[in-house]
Image: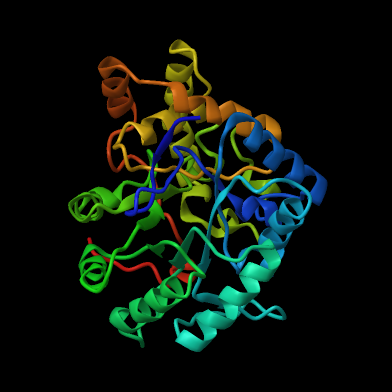
Length: 330
């Protein structure tokens, strides 16, 4: 697995990481044994970048990673996130960037992971009641104490990124980005490049759409974010499937799986891109991890643009109820 520079201090990580929300059963049932097998497969191929969060399964994702690390050599660069809270007894959610709350959650995350520090710590969503400068001060304090090595923000606007970076190095920005979600190209990617900030696309496989087997909306569990996602509701879903059928045909023509082609496209966008597809199985990981060694030809990239032009997806990426915290800027 190729390495790329992740942090501004020169720290590297594998070009592809794992988005660990699936370890908490977000897209289907899983087990500790299956997660441990997936992590072992990652180590076998040199994939060493894990992305989790305190909110994934209410700590389940961090805990299952920690139970693996308690029994195996820790070769990973681990990122986690803080800022979203959820009431375990209801669907109520909110955002909290209070420094005391973040410290409490950071300490809990480290205990679950069996670690003394995080390689990268993100603000999952920005609290609109707290200036980003105040939040950045707290992160810089955690870094000075050695509890985190890098600072990141998720779903941040270019303008807010500049304000944060004025106080100290921001190492990474995470945002949804894929062949069906490209709003980051309207200023965020350019700002990251200007400020030497790594860009971490989450959901690079379009929440399962850019894979061999199409999702079946009727089978989505109630807690699955796709169940009420506009792009998975008819007639949008059928329109989107028509486009993706052409993409799958192209993948077959170039000798790649659809997921490997989609990840290779993400990697081609720049040397500081770190796509983090989610998976809970060794087989899926080995499928798209092969994209690390793929260099797409100009002809293939041109054909992708023809088949999936910017803005092709039918429906918004979130429903109105799901829009909690992403900063708008376009």
